[in-house]
Image 1 (cartoon, rainbow, N blue to C red):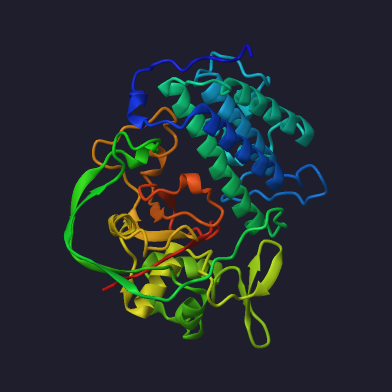
Image 2 (cartoon, rainbow, N blue to C red):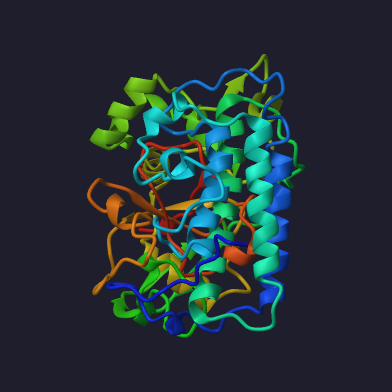
Amino acid sequence: MDNIAEPITRAGWPDFALYRPHPPAAHLRAGLAEAQQRTRELTQLLGRKTPAVPMLEIVNPPLWELGHIAWFQEFWLHRGGDFAAPSILPHADRWYDSANVAHDTRWSLDLPDAQATRAYAEEVFERTQALLDCEALSDARAYFAQLALFHQDMHNEAFCYTWQTLGWPMPVVWPQAQASIAADIDIPAGEMLLGARPGSGFVFDNEKWAHELSLPAFAIAQRVVSNAEYRDFVEDDGYARRELWSEAGWAMRERLALRHPRYWRHGADAWSARRFDRWEPLAPQAPVMHLSCHEAEAYCAWAGRRLPSEAEWERAAGAYPDRYEHGRVWEWTSSRFAPYPGFSADPYKEYSAPWFAVEHRVLRGGSFATPPRLLRTTWRNFYQPDRADPFCGFRTCAI
């Protein structure tokens, strides 16, 4: 394996001991094997008679994305994050480095075909399995193995968003969660630590580090809003009532001519929702999904509620894990994605810092397509507030 390079300490890189405890190498091998198998399942139709993918801001060309996952793993785990260490695939840096390959150019690159892309991905995977076939890993190697694993997990979920956007069939069977009884959890006023603590395992740079906040008392729903609850808002002309919408939200609604959620339609006597390539009867007790933050805020204005801040979300999830249900859909919060005090970028510096400048809202919790190994109460996802292609919904707080 002549392209193996041990990560070296570089200016600005953190002390990787802060990200202990690291999982054993065997655990990482198993996780990466599971992620690779999920990638194979999700992309099995690529290279067959699939329609051309239009250039959309919210998706990547799937064949490019498949190559990018392999490149990312090779670059950080095998090449030590060093462009001077060559890739096993000529031109891989020119094709797959997302920091330097503009989104719109990814449709016109001279990419390898599906068979060659799969071969590259499988070779990187086999080299990774061999690399991790040992008893001990350095702190840096363990960090980058987890970075590669979680990066692949997130792109696997992104493939699912893309299949939903394009109306393509879903090769994986996903459960459809049901909502429980709606009730609020009363949270007393008090101090909290927002963010991750050193020594709590792998975290992304935007979770660093825990800092003290004082929160007043609040009441937060123990579950997310259901389809049935959101349907009541729609049927009460919620999408036509300007007073319920923010200026940005109304502009989005007008631009998209929305009269209801994007993947809903009303038949002769009932609502249905598109789930990938199939229209299904709207499941009343399932969490409402594929809503923008603007739509969530309009519902809150109609219901006399509000979105939680990310601090409120994290406090409730950490304090009441037995009552606070999450992990079914990503949940919009009222918080703008911003760095925590003392923020410093980790080696993959493009993960967070470029997105602070333009408004992105924080989402918390994870979805049905998010692997459990990623679910922790400090994890922050982020999208612009008009996005609705992720598996996103929301919960509310009392005013």
